[in-house]
Length: 63
Figure 1 (cartoon, helix red, strand yellow):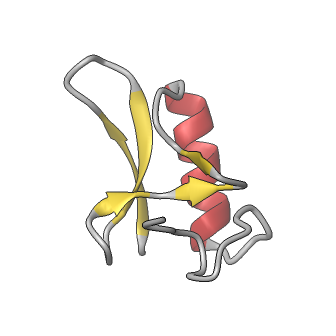
Figure 2 (cartoon, rainbow, N blue to C red; figure 1 turned 60 degrees about the vertical axis):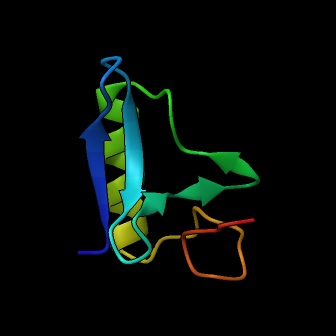
């Protein structure tokens, strides 16, 4: 499992790339400020290899 839904200190949710230790990115948007359901769904899709991220590094970006 590379991606995890996590709650931040402000009680928002994000998708965290555990391999890079950074928030994941999808379509140029950093996946932070999400609801719990959104974060869990996106993390599940990313872990399943679904087409949710448009990035040179699969499912994550540091740009």
